[in-house]
Amino acid sequence: MARASDEAFRAEIRGWLDANLVGEFDELRGAGGPGAEHEHFEGRLRWEQHLGANGWTCVAFPEEYGGRGLSITQQVIYFEEYARARAPARVGIVGEGLLGPTLLAFGTEEQKRRFLPGIVKGTELWCQGYSEPNAGSDLANVQTRAERDGDEWVVSGQKVWTSLAQWAQWCFVLCRTDRDAPKHRGLSYLLVPMRQPGIEIRPIVQITGTSEFNEVFFDGARTPLGNVVGDVNDGWKVAMGTLAFERGVSTLGQQLSFENELLAVFDAARRNGRSNDPVVRQRLARAWIDLQIMRYNALRGLARADDAQLSREGLITKLYWATFHRRLGELAIDVLGPDAMVAERPPYELGAAQRLFLWTRADTIYGGSNQIQRNQIGERALALPREPKASP
Image (tube, rainbow, N blue to C red; front, side, top):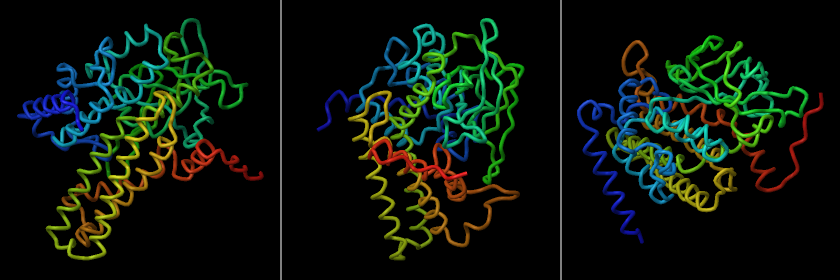
């Protein structure tokens, strides 16, 4: 049974969203998100800062750092109500969902005081510098290096698939600071300003026609020595902590976005009569059931997880939601039928279902491919022998 305080909190956030998603912000409902980050970006940035000014960002952060210190239950309520209101996709999600919790777990007090306020207020946006051309799912193979020069680190190398880099002021970058150490060692987690000489950002045009992620080239970019999170050469531990936070409470907001997408598919099936097809009905029912399983697994994982360690439930989260979302994209296109093959408007303006289908082709690849996820589950959750390496 829900506690009275939780129900009061639900009424508070619901009332605030209803009162504030008006005027300019009402026009932003449903805008943004994966495959559509270009939509109304400046308006969504103003919304982010409006949220921050009214205490509705970073609700899990401790109060001393600008948050509300909400319980997990209340965080779940927050994401539920945010999705219910179809509020615009957050532009500060990388800072709030990834870098902020990492600093709270591993950062110094000076780092927390310097960087958390900008995340809370929505005045400093972040991107993630992990993947490289030869270090995607094998993250420990990163070759971007950072070398000490006086009181600064000098960063050189390349990152790829860097979401939101074209808008971010900062990037947390996994760098190699000891080239002689084994690949899981000798890595450091650096905070690097993006707007400086020595950084080039090249947008990657996706099959959707948009460019929300990028290649980022570091050629002598600099950051102060104090911008290392955790110990020098111990960045692997910090990087894994970030991944654990990525699969925490914020995933519930993602799942509620999936629910909105599924409900749109239901509506389309009713309008065009495809819901009368027993095979389509069965697929719709399966999608709904799979979504409920995803939610319950996430809640179970949150109840058991160590804040900076992936639980066993957390290990299957990415594999499960990526597979689900890819199937949802396929279902959306099948429900539309032949109409899905033609862009809504010239020259290449796609509808929501078309973007969903094209975007979800990548879900089972980025953030660790399905194959790599299964290896992680086998080795880390089930304690199976490591996969043998192929002979040269």
